[in-house]
Length: 545
Image (cartoon, rainbow, N blue to C red):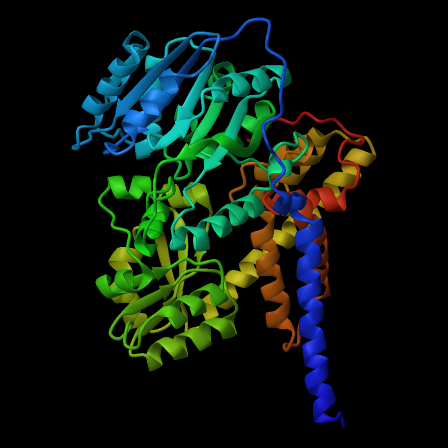
Protein backbone atom coordinates (compact mmCIF):
# COMPACT_ATOMS: atom_id res chain seq x y z
CA UNK A 1 0.00 0.00 0.00
CA UNK A 2 1.43 3.39 -1.02
CA UNK A 3 2.51 5.78 1.72
CA UNK A 4 0.16 8.83 1.82
CA UNK A 5 3.09 11.24 1.54
CA UNK A 6 4.30 9.48 -1.60
CA UNK A 7 0.79 9.65 -3.09
CA UNK A 8 0.65 13.42 -2.53
CA UNK A 9 4.18 13.77 -3.93
CA UNK A 10 3.22 11.77 -7.02
CA UNK A 11 0.22 14.03 -7.51
CA UNK A 12 2.35 17.18 -7.37
CA UNK A 13 4.89 15.56 -9.71
CA UNK A 14 2.12 14.83 -12.19
CA UNK A 15 0.83 18.41 -12.01
CA UNK A 16 4.36 19.77 -12.46
CA UNK A 17 4.85 17.50 -15.46
CA UNK A 18 1.59 18.62 -17.05
CA UNK A 19 2.52 22.26 -16.48
CA UNK A 20 5.93 21.65 -18.06
CA UNK A 21 4.28 20.01 -21.08
CA UNK A 22 1.93 22.97 -21.44
CA UNK A 23 4.88 25.37 -21.47
CA UNK A 24 6.74 23.21 -23.99
CA UNK A 25 3.65 23.28 -26.23
CA UNK A 26 3.44 27.07 -25.96
CA UNK A 27 7.15 27.50 -26.63
CA UNK A 28 7.44 25.08 -29.53
CA UNK A 29 3.90 24.96 -30.93
CA UNK A 30 1.47 27.54 -32.30
CA UNK A 31 4.10 29.18 -34.50
CA UNK A 32 6.10 30.68 -31.60
CA UNK A 33 3.34 33.27 -31.32
CA UNK A 34 4.73 34.54 -28.03
CA UNK A 35 7.69 36.17 -29.77
CA UNK A 36 5.54 38.92 -31.27
CA UNK A 37 8.12 39.33 -34.02
CA UNK A 38 5.93 39.87 -37.07
CA UNK A 39 6.43 43.53 -38.02
CA UNK A 40 6.01 45.10 -41.44
CA UNK A 41 9.35 44.64 -43.27
CA UNK A 42 10.90 47.37 -45.37
CA UNK A 43 10.23 46.94 -49.08
CA UNK A 44 11.41 48.71 -52.25
CA UNK A 45 9.14 51.27 -53.83
CA UNK A 46 7.04 49.83 -56.68
CA UNK A 47 7.69 51.06 -60.22
CA UNK A 48 4.27 52.70 -60.09
CA UNK A 49 2.28 53.53 -56.98
CA UNK A 50 -1.28 52.20 -57.40
CA UNK A 51 -4.36 54.23 -56.48
CA UNK A 52 -5.83 53.49 -53.04
CA UNK A 53 -9.22 54.26 -51.53
CA UNK A 54 -9.53 54.24 -47.75
CA UNK A 55 -12.96 53.12 -46.49
CA UNK A 56 -13.99 54.05 -42.93
CA UNK A 57 -17.25 52.56 -41.57
CA UNK A 58 -18.46 54.91 -38.82
CA UNK A 59 -21.44 54.84 -36.49
CA UNK A 60 -21.55 57.43 -33.69
CA UNK A 61 -17.79 58.00 -33.78
CA UNK A 62 -17.78 61.73 -32.96
CA UNK A 63 -14.96 61.36 -30.46
CA UNK A 64 -12.34 60.07 -32.87
CA UNK A 65 -13.49 60.62 -36.46
CA UNK A 66 -11.77 64.00 -36.82
CA UNK A 67 -8.32 62.72 -35.89
CA UNK A 68 -8.87 59.62 -38.01
CA UNK A 69 -9.74 61.63 -41.14
CA UNK A 70 -6.88 64.10 -40.65
CA UNK A 71 -4.38 61.23 -40.35
CA UNK A 72 -5.70 59.50 -43.46
CA UNK A 73 -5.59 62.62 -45.61
CA UNK A 74 -2.08 63.43 -44.32
CA UNK A 75 -0.60 60.14 -45.53
CA UNK A 76 2.75 60.61 -47.27
CA UNK A 77 1.70 58.45 -50.19
CA UNK A 78 3.11 59.09 -53.68
CA UNK A 79 0.08 57.62 -55.48
CA UNK A 80 -3.56 58.69 -55.62
CA UNK A 81 -5.39 58.38 -52.29
CA UNK A 82 -9.10 58.99 -51.70
CA UNK A 83 -10.91 58.67 -48.36
CA UNK A 84 -14.54 57.61 -47.96
CA UNK A 85 -16.33 57.73 -44.61
CA UNK A 86 -19.53 55.66 -44.57
CA UNK A 87 -21.76 57.33 -41.96
CA UNK A 88 -23.83 54.39 -40.76
CA UNK A 89 -26.87 56.39 -39.57
CA UNK A 90 -25.00 58.17 -36.76
CA UNK A 91 -26.88 60.42 -34.35
CA UNK A 92 -23.92 62.31 -32.86
CA UNK A 93 -22.76 64.48 -35.76
CA UNK A 94 -20.09 62.07 -37.02
CA UNK A 95 -20.54 63.18 -40.66
CA UNK A 96 -20.23 66.92 -39.89
CA UNK A 97 -17.10 66.37 -37.81
CA UNK A 98 -15.57 64.26 -40.57
CA UNK A 99 -16.18 67.01 -43.13
CA UNK A 100 -14.76 69.64 -40.79
CA UNK A 101 -11.57 67.61 -40.38
CA UNK A 102 -11.22 67.20 -44.15
CA UNK A 103 -11.56 70.97 -44.66
CA UNK A 104 -8.87 71.61 -42.04
CA UNK A 105 -6.40 69.60 -44.12
CA UNK A 106 -7.37 71.37 -47.35
CA UNK A 107 -7.81 67.96 -48.99
CA UNK A 108 -11.59 67.81 -49.19
CA UNK A 109 -11.33 67.16 -52.94
CA UNK A 110 -10.08 63.66 -52.07
CA UNK A 111 -12.74 63.10 -49.42
CA UNK A 112 -16.35 61.91 -49.35
CA UNK A 113 -18.97 61.10 -46.74
CA UNK A 114 -21.60 58.55 -47.74
CA UNK A 115 -24.90 58.41 -45.88
CA UNK A 116 -25.28 54.72 -45.14
CA UNK A 117 -28.40 52.92 -46.35
CA UNK A 118 -30.51 50.88 -43.92
CA UNK A 119 -29.11 47.43 -43.21
CA UNK A 120 -29.83 45.04 -46.08
CA UNK A 121 -30.94 41.45 -45.61
CA UNK A 122 -28.17 38.89 -45.18
CA UNK A 123 -25.58 41.52 -44.23
CA UNK A 124 -23.94 42.30 -40.91
CA UNK A 125 -23.76 45.98 -39.95
CA UNK A 126 -20.07 46.72 -40.44
CA UNK A 127 -19.75 44.67 -43.62
CA UNK A 128 -22.76 46.44 -45.11
CA UNK A 129 -21.04 49.79 -44.50
CA UNK A 130 -17.80 48.43 -45.99
CA UNK A 131 -19.72 47.20 -49.05
CA UNK A 132 -21.19 50.63 -49.67
CA UNK A 133 -17.76 52.22 -49.39
CA UNK A 134 -16.28 49.66 -51.76
CA UNK A 135 -18.97 50.36 -54.35
CA UNK A 136 -18.21 54.09 -54.13
CA UNK A 137 -14.47 53.47 -54.51
CA UNK A 138 -14.77 52.76 -58.22
CA UNK A 139 -11.87 50.90 -59.80
CA UNK A 140 -9.14 51.64 -57.23
CA UNK A 141 -6.69 48.68 -57.29
CA UNK A 142 -6.39 48.73 -53.49
CA UNK A 143 -8.96 49.23 -50.73
CA UNK A 144 -7.75 50.26 -47.28
CA UNK A 145 -10.34 49.30 -44.67
CA UNK A 146 -9.77 51.02 -41.33
CA UNK A 147 -11.77 52.02 -38.24
CA UNK A 148 -12.98 55.46 -37.23
CA UNK A 149 -11.15 55.44 -33.88
CA UNK A 150 -7.68 54.75 -35.30
CA UNK A 151 -4.92 57.21 -36.18
CA UNK A 152 -2.27 56.05 -38.65
CA UNK A 153 1.23 57.48 -38.86
CA UNK A 154 2.05 59.36 -42.09
CA UNK A 155 4.15 56.53 -43.59
CA UNK A 156 1.81 53.63 -42.88
CA UNK A 157 0.08 53.46 -46.26
CA UNK A 158 3.33 53.89 -48.19
CA UNK A 159 4.85 50.96 -46.30
CA UNK A 160 1.74 48.78 -46.62
CA UNK A 161 1.52 49.23 -50.38
CA UNK A 162 5.26 48.77 -50.94
CA UNK A 163 5.25 45.46 -49.08
CA UNK A 164 1.99 44.29 -50.66
CA UNK A 165 3.32 44.98 -54.16
CA UNK A 166 6.72 43.40 -53.47
CA UNK A 167 5.11 40.10 -52.42
CA UNK A 168 1.90 40.18 -54.46
CA UNK A 169 -0.19 40.05 -51.29
CA UNK A 170 -3.96 39.74 -51.45
CA UNK A 171 -4.33 41.17 -47.93
CA UNK A 172 -1.90 43.12 -45.75
CA UNK A 173 -3.08 43.79 -42.19
CA UNK A 174 -1.70 45.43 -39.06
CA UNK A 175 -2.88 45.01 -35.50
CA UNK A 176 -2.75 48.59 -34.26
CA UNK A 177 -1.52 49.66 -30.84
CA UNK A 178 -4.30 49.69 -28.24
CA UNK A 179 -4.50 52.10 -25.32
CA UNK A 180 -2.63 50.71 -22.33
CA UNK A 181 -2.46 53.59 -19.84
CA UNK A 182 -5.04 52.88 -17.17
CA UNK A 183 -4.93 50.13 -14.54
CA UNK A 184 -7.56 47.94 -16.19
CA UNK A 185 -5.95 48.42 -19.60
CA UNK A 186 -2.52 47.38 -18.30
CA UNK A 187 -4.09 44.33 -16.69
CA UNK A 188 -6.26 43.10 -19.58
CA UNK A 189 -5.12 44.52 -22.92
CA UNK A 190 -1.75 42.68 -23.11
CA UNK A 191 -3.40 39.28 -22.40
CA UNK A 192 -6.02 40.09 -25.05
CA UNK A 193 -3.31 40.70 -27.67
CA UNK A 194 -1.37 37.63 -26.47
CA UNK A 195 -4.46 35.45 -26.81
CA UNK A 196 -5.24 36.82 -30.28
CA UNK A 197 -1.73 35.88 -31.44
CA UNK A 198 -2.15 32.42 -29.93
CA UNK A 199 -5.50 31.95 -31.64
CA UNK A 200 -4.18 33.17 -35.02
CA UNK A 201 -0.39 32.65 -34.93
CA UNK A 202 0.93 35.42 -37.17
CA UNK A 203 3.70 33.24 -38.62
CA UNK A 204 1.12 30.67 -39.70
CA UNK A 205 -1.12 33.36 -41.15
CA UNK A 206 1.86 34.62 -43.17
CA UNK A 207 2.81 31.14 -44.42
CA UNK A 208 0.98 30.38 -47.72
CA UNK A 209 1.36 26.64 -47.02
CA UNK A 210 -0.77 26.76 -43.87
CA UNK A 211 -4.56 27.14 -43.79
CA UNK A 212 -4.55 29.54 -40.81
CA UNK A 213 -5.99 32.89 -41.85
CA UNK A 214 -6.39 36.00 -39.72
CA UNK A 215 -6.47 39.77 -39.92
CA UNK A 216 -7.07 42.81 -37.73
CA UNK A 217 -10.04 44.89 -38.84
CA UNK A 218 -8.51 48.23 -37.87
CA UNK A 219 -6.04 48.13 -40.75
CA UNK A 220 -6.59 45.93 -43.81
CA UNK A 221 -5.13 46.73 -47.23
CA UNK A 222 -6.98 44.57 -49.78
CA UNK A 223 -6.08 43.93 -53.42
CA UNK A 224 -9.34 44.65 -55.22
CA UNK A 225 -8.81 42.15 -58.05
CA UNK A 226 -8.44 39.26 -55.61
CA UNK A 227 -11.47 40.35 -53.60
CA UNK A 228 -13.53 40.51 -56.78
CA UNK A 229 -12.31 37.04 -57.78
CA UNK A 230 -13.44 35.73 -54.38
CA UNK A 231 -16.95 37.06 -54.96
CA UNK A 232 -16.53 40.41 -53.20
CA UNK A 233 -17.75 41.22 -49.73
CA UNK A 234 -21.11 39.73 -50.72
CA UNK A 235 -19.49 36.29 -50.38
CA UNK A 236 -19.22 36.92 -46.63
CA UNK A 237 -21.90 39.56 -46.11
CA UNK A 238 -23.52 37.90 -43.09
CA UNK A 239 -20.22 37.05 -41.37
CA UNK A 240 -20.01 37.87 -37.67
CA UNK A 241 -16.24 38.44 -37.70
CA UNK A 242 -15.36 40.56 -40.72
CA UNK A 243 -11.55 40.65 -40.51
CA UNK A 244 -10.71 36.97 -40.02
CA UNK A 245 -13.52 35.91 -42.36
CA UNK A 246 -12.09 38.19 -45.05
CA UNK A 247 -8.64 36.68 -44.49
CA UNK A 248 -10.05 33.15 -44.85
CA UNK A 249 -11.87 34.19 -48.02
CA UNK A 250 -8.77 35.64 -49.67
CA UNK A 251 -5.96 33.31 -48.59
CA UNK A 252 -6.86 30.46 -50.98
CA UNK A 253 -6.47 32.98 -53.83
CA UNK A 254 -3.23 34.65 -52.79
CA UNK A 255 -0.79 35.17 -49.90
CA UNK A 256 -1.81 37.30 -46.94
CA UNK A 257 0.20 38.95 -44.18
CA UNK A 258 -0.63 40.00 -40.60
CA UNK A 259 1.69 41.76 -38.19
CA UNK A 260 1.95 44.14 -35.25
CA UNK A 261 1.80 47.83 -36.09
CA UNK A 262 3.88 50.44 -34.27
CA UNK A 263 2.80 53.56 -36.19
CA UNK A 264 -0.96 53.12 -35.89
CA UNK A 265 -2.85 53.50 -32.62
CA UNK A 266 -6.37 53.30 -31.31
CA UNK A 267 -7.82 56.43 -29.73
CA UNK A 268 -10.24 54.48 -27.60
CA UNK A 269 -9.32 54.72 -23.91
CA UNK A 270 -10.73 52.17 -21.46
CA UNK A 271 -10.78 53.62 -17.97
CA UNK A 272 -13.02 51.03 -16.32
CA UNK A 273 -13.57 47.29 -16.51
CA UNK A 274 -17.04 47.88 -17.96
CA UNK A 275 -15.56 49.83 -20.86
CA UNK A 276 -13.23 46.96 -21.72
CA UNK A 277 -16.29 44.71 -21.70
CA UNK A 278 -17.92 47.13 -24.12
CA UNK A 279 -14.88 46.75 -26.39
CA UNK A 280 -15.63 43.04 -26.53
CA UNK A 281 -19.34 43.71 -27.04
CA UNK A 282 -18.58 46.14 -29.87
CA UNK A 283 -16.44 43.57 -31.68
CA UNK A 284 -17.33 42.36 -35.15
CA UNK A 285 -18.74 39.16 -33.69
CA UNK A 286 -21.56 41.03 -31.95
CA UNK A 287 -22.30 43.96 -34.27
CA UNK A 288 -24.92 42.12 -36.39
CA UNK A 289 -26.81 41.11 -33.25
CA UNK A 290 -26.67 44.66 -31.93
CA UNK A 291 -28.14 45.83 -35.24
CA UNK A 292 -31.10 43.55 -34.55
CA UNK A 293 -31.67 44.88 -31.04
CA UNK A 294 -29.58 42.49 -28.92
CA UNK A 295 -28.06 43.82 -25.68
CA UNK A 296 -24.65 42.80 -24.36
CA UNK A 297 -24.13 42.73 -20.63
CA UNK A 298 -21.61 41.42 -18.09
CA UNK A 299 -22.31 37.81 -17.10
CA UNK A 300 -24.23 38.43 -13.87
CA UNK A 301 -26.35 41.18 -15.41
CA UNK A 302 -27.16 39.05 -18.46
CA UNK A 303 -28.24 36.12 -16.30
CA UNK A 304 -30.37 38.40 -14.13
CA UNK A 305 -32.13 39.83 -17.19
CA UNK A 306 -32.94 36.53 -18.93
CA UNK A 307 -35.48 33.87 -17.85
CA UNK A 308 -33.92 31.32 -20.24
CA UNK A 309 -30.16 30.82 -20.51
CA UNK A 310 -28.95 29.21 -23.76
CA UNK A 311 -25.38 28.09 -23.09
CA UNK A 312 -23.16 27.36 -26.11
CA UNK A 313 -19.76 27.45 -24.43
CA UNK A 314 -16.75 25.42 -25.53
CA UNK A 315 -16.98 22.69 -22.89
CA UNK A 316 -18.30 21.74 -19.45
CA UNK A 317 -15.38 23.46 -17.72
CA UNK A 318 -16.30 26.79 -19.31
CA UNK A 319 -19.92 26.52 -18.17
CA UNK A 320 -18.79 25.50 -14.68
CA UNK A 321 -16.52 28.56 -14.54
CA UNK A 322 -19.45 30.80 -15.46
CA UNK A 323 -21.62 29.24 -12.76
CA UNK A 324 -18.79 29.71 -10.25
CA UNK A 325 -18.64 33.42 -11.12
CA UNK A 326 -22.35 34.03 -10.45
CA UNK A 327 -23.65 35.30 -7.11
CA UNK A 328 -25.78 33.04 -4.94
CA UNK A 329 -29.35 32.71 -6.18
CA UNK A 330 -28.50 33.97 -9.67
CA UNK A 331 -30.08 31.00 -11.51
CA UNK A 332 -32.99 30.40 -9.14
CA UNK A 333 -36.18 29.88 -11.18
CA UNK A 334 -34.19 30.09 -14.44
CA UNK A 335 -34.22 27.61 -17.34
CA UNK A 336 -30.64 26.68 -18.26
CA UNK A 337 -30.27 24.98 -21.64
CA UNK A 338 -26.83 23.39 -22.14
CA UNK A 339 -26.18 23.10 -25.91
CA UNK A 340 -22.49 22.17 -26.14
CA UNK A 341 -21.07 18.70 -26.79
CA UNK A 342 -20.06 17.38 -23.37
CA UNK A 343 -19.85 13.98 -21.65
CA UNK A 344 -23.03 12.40 -20.19
CA UNK A 345 -21.65 12.43 -16.65
CA UNK A 346 -20.62 16.07 -17.01
CA UNK A 347 -24.18 16.89 -18.04
CA UNK A 348 -25.66 15.00 -15.09
CA UNK A 349 -23.38 16.83 -12.65
CA UNK A 350 -24.34 20.17 -14.17
CA UNK A 351 -28.03 19.27 -13.93
CA UNK A 352 -27.62 18.43 -10.25
CA UNK A 353 -25.83 21.70 -9.59
CA UNK A 354 -28.45 23.78 -11.40
CA UNK A 355 -31.32 22.04 -9.59
CA UNK A 356 -29.66 22.54 -6.20
CA UNK A 357 -29.42 26.25 -7.04
CA UNK A 358 -33.14 26.39 -7.72
CA UNK A 359 -32.93 26.31 -11.52
CA UNK A 360 -34.19 23.95 -14.22
CA UNK A 361 -31.81 22.12 -16.55
CA UNK A 362 -32.23 20.80 -20.09
CA UNK A 363 -29.41 19.43 -22.21
CA UNK A 364 -29.84 20.21 -25.90
CA UNK A 365 -26.76 19.50 -28.04
CA UNK A 366 -27.30 20.05 -31.76
CA UNK A 367 -26.42 18.02 -34.85
CA UNK A 368 -25.48 20.13 -37.83
CA UNK A 369 -23.06 22.87 -38.75
CA UNK A 370 -22.98 26.44 -40.07
CA UNK A 371 -25.17 25.87 -43.18
CA UNK A 372 -27.87 24.08 -41.15
CA UNK A 373 -27.76 26.74 -38.45
CA UNK A 374 -28.18 29.52 -41.00
CA UNK A 375 -31.23 27.86 -42.55
CA UNK A 376 -32.86 26.67 -39.31
CA UNK A 377 -32.29 22.96 -40.09
CA UNK A 378 -30.35 21.84 -37.01
CA UNK A 379 -31.41 18.72 -35.14
CA UNK A 380 -31.76 19.59 -31.44
CA UNK A 381 -31.40 16.55 -29.16
CA UNK A 382 -32.86 17.13 -25.71
CA UNK A 383 -32.36 15.32 -22.44
CA UNK A 384 -34.23 16.12 -19.27
CA UNK A 385 -37.84 16.66 -18.20
CA UNK A 386 -40.09 16.34 -21.22
CA UNK A 387 -42.42 18.99 -19.80
CA UNK A 388 -39.53 21.47 -19.75
CA UNK A 389 -38.73 20.70 -23.38
CA UNK A 390 -42.38 21.25 -24.35
CA UNK A 391 -42.38 24.63 -22.59
CA UNK A 392 -39.19 25.68 -24.41
CA UNK A 393 -40.26 24.18 -27.75
CA UNK A 394 -41.26 27.52 -29.39
CA UNK A 395 -37.73 28.79 -28.73
CA UNK A 396 -35.81 25.62 -29.66
CA UNK A 397 -37.88 25.08 -32.80
CA UNK A 398 -36.37 28.24 -34.26
CA UNK A 399 -33.15 26.26 -34.64
CA UNK A 400 -34.68 23.26 -36.39
CA UNK A 401 -36.21 19.91 -35.49
CA UNK A 402 -36.38 19.11 -31.75
CA UNK A 403 -36.24 15.51 -30.55
CA UNK A 404 -36.50 14.35 -26.95
CA UNK A 405 -34.09 11.50 -26.21
CA UNK A 406 -34.76 10.80 -22.55
CA UNK A 407 -33.25 11.59 -19.16
CA UNK A 408 -30.35 13.98 -18.67
CA UNK A 409 -27.17 12.44 -20.08
CA UNK A 410 -28.79 10.48 -22.88
CA UNK A 411 -28.83 13.34 -25.39
CA UNK A 412 -25.20 14.08 -24.49
CA UNK A 413 -24.29 10.43 -25.04
CA UNK A 414 -26.14 10.29 -28.35
CA UNK A 415 -24.34 13.41 -29.57
CA UNK A 416 -20.98 11.80 -28.72
CA UNK A 417 -22.03 8.64 -30.53
CA UNK A 418 -22.89 10.66 -33.64
CA UNK A 419 -19.69 12.68 -33.52
CA UNK A 420 -17.66 9.47 -33.19
CA UNK A 421 -19.17 8.50 -36.54
CA UNK A 422 -17.73 11.71 -38.03
CA UNK A 423 -14.23 10.56 -37.17
CA UNK A 424 -14.89 6.92 -38.06
CA UNK A 425 -16.45 7.63 -41.46
CA UNK A 426 -13.78 10.20 -42.30
CA UNK A 427 -10.97 7.81 -41.39
CA UNK A 428 -12.45 4.83 -43.23
CA UNK A 429 -13.15 6.80 -46.39
CA UNK A 430 -9.70 8.41 -46.25
CA UNK A 431 -7.96 5.04 -46.20
CA UNK A 432 -10.06 3.70 -49.08
CA UNK A 433 -9.56 6.84 -51.16
CA UNK A 434 -5.85 6.73 -50.44
CA UNK A 435 -5.56 3.17 -51.75
CA UNK A 436 -7.58 4.07 -54.85
CA UNK A 437 -5.27 6.96 -55.67
CA UNK A 438 -2.06 5.09 -54.92
CA UNK A 439 -3.08 2.27 -57.27
CA UNK A 440 -3.90 4.69 -60.07
CA UNK A 441 -7.62 3.89 -60.08
CA UNK A 442 -9.83 6.66 -61.41
CA UNK A 443 -11.47 8.47 -58.50
CA UNK A 444 -14.55 8.94 -60.69
CA UNK A 445 -14.96 5.17 -61.05
CA UNK A 446 -14.54 4.67 -57.31
CA UNK A 447 -17.15 7.31 -56.46
CA UNK A 448 -19.73 6.12 -59.01
CA UNK A 449 -19.59 2.58 -57.63
CA UNK A 450 -19.67 3.84 -54.04
CA UNK A 451 -22.66 6.13 -54.61
CA UNK A 452 -24.69 3.23 -56.01
CA UNK A 453 -23.93 0.97 -53.04
CA UNK A 454 -25.20 0.62 -49.48
CA UNK A 455 -21.76 1.77 -48.29
CA UNK A 456 -22.30 5.35 -49.41
CA UNK A 457 -22.64 8.32 -47.04
CA UNK A 458 -23.25 11.89 -48.32
CA UNK A 459 -20.32 13.18 -46.30
CA UNK A 460 -17.98 11.37 -48.72
CA UNK A 461 -18.96 13.69 -51.57
CA UNK A 462 -19.21 16.68 -49.26
CA UNK A 463 -15.53 16.40 -48.34
CA UNK A 464 -14.12 14.83 -51.52
CA UNK A 465 -12.94 18.10 -53.06
CA UNK A 466 -11.01 18.89 -49.89
CA UNK A 467 -9.16 15.57 -50.03
CA UNK A 468 -8.26 15.94 -53.71
CA UNK A 469 -7.07 19.53 -53.33
CA UNK A 470 -5.50 19.02 -49.90
CA UNK A 471 -7.39 22.18 -48.87
CA UNK A 472 -8.94 22.30 -45.41
CA UNK A 473 -9.54 26.02 -44.95
CA UNK A 474 -12.89 27.71 -44.14
CA UNK A 475 -13.93 25.00 -41.66
CA UNK A 476 -17.50 24.52 -40.47
CA UNK A 477 -16.23 22.08 -37.84
CA UNK A 478 -12.52 22.54 -36.97
CA UNK A 479 -10.19 19.65 -36.27
CA UNK A 480 -9.60 20.76 -32.68
CA UNK A 481 -13.32 20.49 -31.90
CA UNK A 482 -13.49 16.95 -33.24
CA UNK A 483 -10.43 16.09 -31.15
CA UNK A 484 -12.17 17.41 -28.03
CA UNK A 485 -15.27 15.32 -28.77
CA UNK A 486 -13.26 12.17 -29.47
CA UNK A 487 -11.42 12.53 -26.18
CA UNK A 488 -14.81 12.77 -24.46
CA UNK A 489 -15.98 9.64 -26.28
CA UNK A 490 -12.91 7.64 -25.17
CA UNK A 491 -13.27 8.85 -21.58
CA UNK A 492 -17.01 8.07 -21.53
CA UNK A 493 -16.59 4.53 -22.84
CA UNK A 494 -13.65 3.72 -20.54
CA UNK A 495 -15.90 2.16 -17.88
CA UNK A 496 -18.26 0.45 -20.32
CA UNK A 497 -18.02 -2.98 -22.02
CA UNK A 498 -16.92 -1.28 -25.25
CA UNK A 499 -13.57 -1.60 -27.02
CA UNK A 500 -12.60 1.98 -27.82
CA UNK A 501 -9.14 1.31 -29.26
CA UNK A 502 -10.18 2.64 -32.68
CA UNK A 503 -11.50 5.97 -31.32
CA UNK A 504 -8.31 6.18 -29.24
CA UNK A 505 -6.34 5.86 -32.49
CA UNK A 506 -8.35 8.70 -34.03
CA UNK A 507 -7.46 10.78 -30.96
CA UNK A 508 -3.77 10.04 -31.48
CA UNK A 509 -3.92 11.03 -35.15
CA UNK A 510 -5.90 14.19 -34.41
CA UNK A 511 -3.41 15.14 -31.69
CA UNK A 512 -0.56 14.79 -34.18
CA UNK A 513 -2.37 17.21 -36.50
CA UNK A 514 -3.29 19.72 -33.80
CA UNK A 515 -0.17 21.90 -33.96
CA UNK A 516 -0.28 22.34 -37.74
CA UNK A 517 -4.00 22.11 -38.46
CA UNK A 518 -6.05 22.71 -35.32
CA UNK A 519 -8.04 25.43 -37.05
CA UNK A 520 -8.48 23.43 -40.28
CA UNK A 521 -11.56 21.44 -41.26
CA UNK A 522 -11.75 18.04 -39.56
CA UNK A 523 -11.36 16.41 -43.00
CA UNK A 524 -7.64 17.13 -42.57
CA UNK A 525 -7.60 13.70 -40.89
CA UNK A 526 -7.06 12.43 -44.44
CA UNK A 527 -3.64 14.09 -44.40
CA UNK A 528 -2.61 11.99 -41.40
CA UNK A 529 -3.82 8.73 -42.98
CA UNK A 530 -2.58 9.30 -46.53
CA UNK A 531 0.94 10.64 -46.22
CA UNK A 532 1.21 11.31 -49.97
CA UNK A 533 -2.16 12.83 -50.89
CA UNK A 534 -0.92 13.76 -54.35
CA UNK A 535 0.01 10.23 -55.33
CA UNK A 536 -1.73 8.23 -58.06
CA UNK A 537 -5.21 8.38 -59.44
CA UNK A 538 -7.21 10.86 -61.42
CA UNK A 539 -7.80 14.06 -59.51
CA UNK A 540 -10.92 15.26 -61.30
CA UNK A 541 -14.28 13.96 -60.24
CA UNK A 542 -17.79 15.14 -61.17
CA UNK A 543 -20.22 16.21 -58.48
CA UNK A 544 -22.57 13.66 -57.01
CA UNK A 545 -25.76 13.18 -58.95
